[in-house]
Image: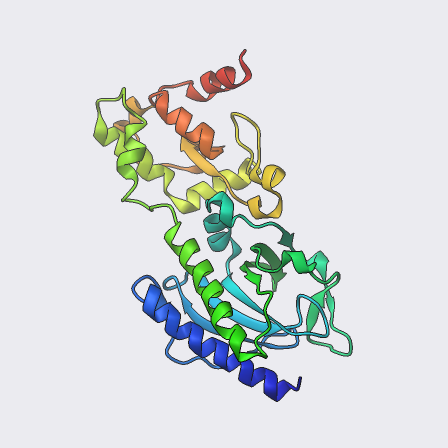
Length: 299
């Protein structure tokens, strides 16, 4: 198949997918009006279909040889120039959407006869098509990430196009609609963890400080993303997908929040999601971290 023919097959898939995304997800995503084919640096092309919002992960489709040199295949999924924005979304996906494999720089090599294109060192096993994967790469000193899947069908036959479009739209729709609600829509649920605390204003102050992203990042890096209660890290449990993922708990007792105006990273401690919710249930008292650690280890 010539490059010109491959381009035409790809354009057909892109056009049909864009129409289907507009019909089914038009109110949930920001679709692009222009869909130029761009060089992919993987012996093929890519198209930006839209995004989840300004600065948020993009919806993309690729037609390239990355999965196995010598034959182009369709990939569709999400891309983020800042890996943490996609990593955090992927980490909370339901089991059915969890990546079956993670890829990084160590899995790639230069394409034969090319100085600018890259492919996988070991081609994907056909059983890995239509299964989501998470990829994270160093690019100019920053981490970029991809979450998506390669389709088993080839677009060189027109009868395959509806199936490719349907599977791609289905993946985008399931991921977007499975997102956990973000603040403030889930704040009532978080506040309910403090059932024994009467001062709801103090609870809201506590939760607001735990949402300070710069302080949370400082805290997580200081603690090497390790839960200070159960000592787990998401990377050790989930592999590359868990890299750089953790939560932070504000340790100042609720009764003293009114006297504290400025928070710093020293007021936070790194925790996993499970231990975080349990800490909230303890009621915001001094020494809760040590108390929960004793409960966890049955000391």
